[in-house]
Image (spheres, rainbow, N blue to C red):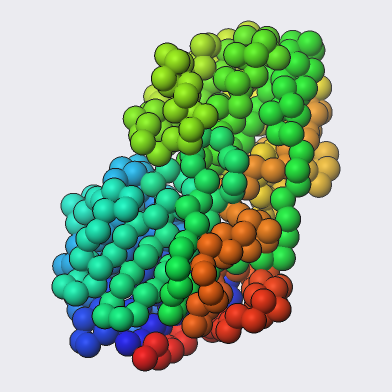
Length: 458
């Protein structure tokens, strides 16, 4: 039995782990590398495996850094089924075609501007590739046994990260392997807490995104309420750049809770992102994934994620109507780092007016417009024009969907004894080192693998 680390080794992106046993093989996650150019270039490097030789792909969740390479696998000959939870399957139907559209737009832009060494520039995969690979997705429920390969018994356990996210409990012969995927927060809105492991395992792949950090313990709901009230008092517009999946729904849930308790005025809320609209509708359908608090609201007749003055904007015309609606109002739009999408139109319209406020609710990569806003730039470039930043700008902490160091360690407490070997993945070098040191201090055998490394699991 061997395991090769084809992504998320020494970095937080491109999650791909190739597991082989007795001539059969599976790919655990099929993520696309995102971020700096040096990482994105890895997407174009040929895999050391032939996709046609894979017997199965097993996904942990739908985020593009865990699924975005699937269309390329399909394009290059994948014939195997792709296993996932039902929620992951339905989110992939939203996320993968959108990722393909961005690939095609990028290639077209480079061809028009002649900014490519290749003639013509090509997308990593097409919308057709994305739609074709979706037919290979096979859905499963949590705790439902399935055999991705004959003799391999697998279970999905709730990871509490995004809708349908899971960690994988895999038994091959006498060996038990656990793949954590991305673990979510405890006591986060809507979704259940990550399900702890039990017993012992031989091999653990553990994410370490926040292996060296703790999340702040601020009251997000109260802080959000204060900002909403302040903007309403000024008769301004609150603009929230937010990731379309999970972050948008969490913001909406908190606004609902504030309104239900009469803590904020009933302002109109616009979700202006086709992907966020579709994801929100999907979240409404999956009551089985809700935590006890959210299930109780549904049982009481509350329509969760259906804020009483909510406007879902999918078409361009609906998006344009937002500007015509008088303030005060709230606009939630993608992308979360203001790198593209409809949020740019709202920033261009609302940043020059001091009555308005931009609330940043997630991590901002260095150099993005979101990063420039929170670091205090007095103007930012949008659509070729320099836009003055007169609106208020603030960042609301505590919205990460990843478990922090303490929460990761608490999840690990579920094992009755240390795994035989723990491989730390999905983290930057500092996070991996801190997580490794903490676990070694508990007596765990920890390995921090390198990209491309193959290890024997016999």
